[in-house]
Image 1 (cartoon, rainbow, N blue to C red):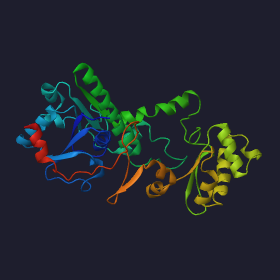
Image 2: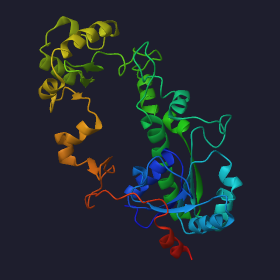
Image 3: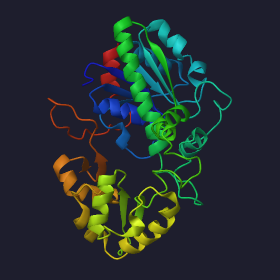
Image 4: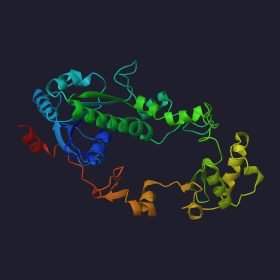
Length: 357
């Protein structure tokens, strides 16, 4: 879908490389500028799949000149340094737009390019804690804990950077004018709260944890099974809740009749804990799978790959011992995606240099 688009990625951590991986998955030609002599988390990192690699020393004048040549021929650039670093290297937006006016300059940070924390260090949990996105990630009285990297680095960071890059590329094609994409995890994770805030407008979201429709009821919960597994339950709509009770044999039980009475939620949650503890995860899965009761087993990645849903959709893959997932979303008329190998650092040096000389 993005054939003909070239992105230069200056090696960084987490969300920036993830965003450029997503663009590469969708067909963009992504050239990652690895640090010369540097090492990543692993050799041939998964988030470098589908990219081409050249290693440069950004403190070396000749290598900076090479990077400028790369950027001059690119549609977009992605970097994840703290604010001001690219400017000090002489390859900030002003300098790059001077020789490539249509360039979309993507900047990935935690706190943003402006503001009192812009130069402070931080990580995923810090950004989503300040944005409000971590607040509901716990039961009442428990410590907040969201799935690592998913809400901040990927959701509020990489995905918003990718959308910003695509919007900038469309605008550049229409106007010939580039832009700077200021993608901050703080901003993106806060923006994701708007769906929950719509519930607040309707009275379904409270500031106190455990009192809202999605974090308080017995029908919006995870339960431990007899074998130590877990089942997720979230039957919000009345017709789905009715089927949930039917499959549990609780239809007509007076205690469960008032689905949306907050006063009864703790008691009913305790009752359901006892119910789900009576069968294994496999037994509950057999009872609920394919129904409208909105109940599903909690699977780890290996279990997700082995599930029949994955057999049908081929979302999870294992290639060369590396577990990974296929790109999303999918597009009609496209050939089925096949995993593309990640490059060794500097693997495409001569190929890339030949293209810019």
